View 1 (cartoon, rainbow, N blue to C red):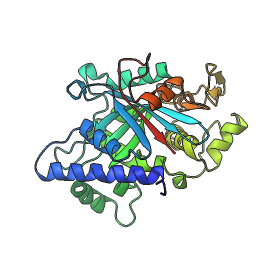
View 2: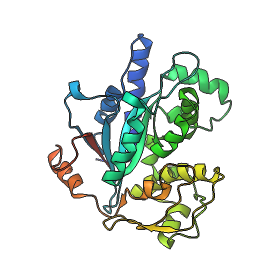
View 3: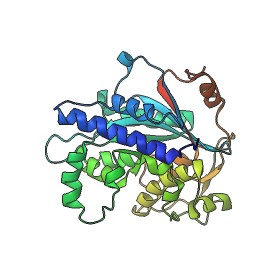
View 4: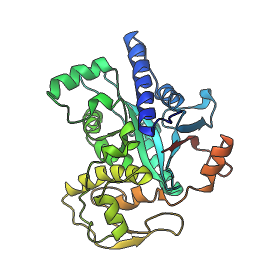
Length: 310
């Protein structure tokens, strides 16, 4: 039997989510991020292992899930992910990244990801295909430049989401629609966007420069495409580029010397992404793959775990 690629499996998951959203909105109902996530992972089980660590009645908006992208040579890329959905109360979508009591969901996501040494991300669920057709067909004539057709499920770095949040919930939605990466593209190395330009390209290690300059596969492809969003945003900032390198904590991280530049972000954008890229997965990932339950020592705040295998 031919094993389907991770990209094709993620595509099937996205289509299942689209059908659910279309059906719920078509009947006048209101769908939830948690249900969309359950449908996504239930339809990707050929390449994805997942489990919720909380009972359904305990799950909540803003819950943090650990995602690990694992490739054939054991390299992996870790993310801490919150699910968010677009709302469309009128003729424009809205997206509230801060959320929660006191508007601190985003800040807590960033703190937790730093403690776990992974990259903070949002998985974004867009509205129905009818809404998309009305907006994309009107605003994006010809070939759509924003991958709207496959962006029902997409991923956005939390560092960029933080910047978008200052513009209000309507502008945040507009910017996210233009910037977020379709989830299935992260599982497909043929969607490599080419070389990444960055201020520090000639002050970093040869191995990291090669990652950013050449096509990548597996976990390195995921890290590169996530980093691309932040690097492109950094080039639009007028702040001076910091030239120094910071030593990362010793461990299985592939890159341990990274520029300490923050630009206009609240965190060092190199470290924010590449601390999640490892030569081998943390022991708790192997434990999860063997047992399917919460590994000992994992923070109680982690609502679930996903391992996506190339």
